[in-house]
Image (tube, rainbow, N blue to C red; front, side, top):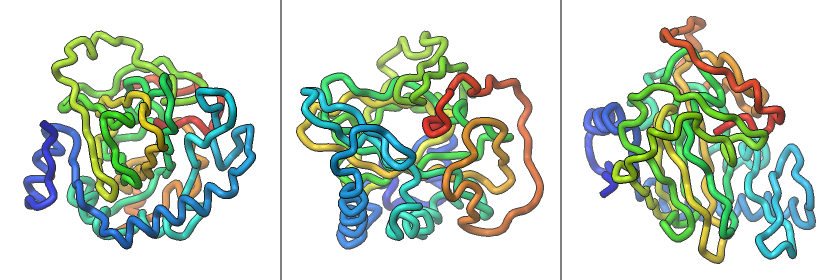
Length: 281
């Protein structure tokens, strides 16, 4: 059973995040806020009509029947519509993030995953941190659901507590987390530890940068859209991976301390990902 923390104290939220590595808020946005984001998505997607190849704005793939091309990701959505830009500053989100990362918060990147229907398309088990290593682990992903995220349409799967295992080596693929895999898959053998995380439209899921997560194919009939916002503590500097995302380093709250906090360790760098657009989890 996935725990939800809509009406618990910040201290309880932080305790679960530190212990389990994730939080779920099923009713974060109100209907008007959700409608604004859905309208923004529809507006941006009109620019992809007739697109048959990916570019610096859209990642497109052929539909299962091969009859058309569909958008699977919008890169840097905050650059393409004011509603998405405003969302990263939404206090409902940032208040939760501040409780976990501290008062000085920066943006790392944003993306909008549409997850079109498919019999096979999935995200393999992975962590986010290895795709863009930083000097410490105060780095997390926020997912805001624009559609209901269900088991049928390929909602998130996680291994609660796996963030405490530290970064794992990955076999990086050109298309980033779409195909990259863990080098040592033995950590996945105990499927009783896996949890599915369904979240309704307007809800939020967030997880630690070292959380092992994946998702199955969308076996429904409509895309399952979610915007992903990666936040970091302002004293957490990126070491490798793509730094060219729109808004990378944008100060969301607080100030830049102009110092760096480092954690000891040896981590593999994601140099094998040849396409900089795909260098994110």
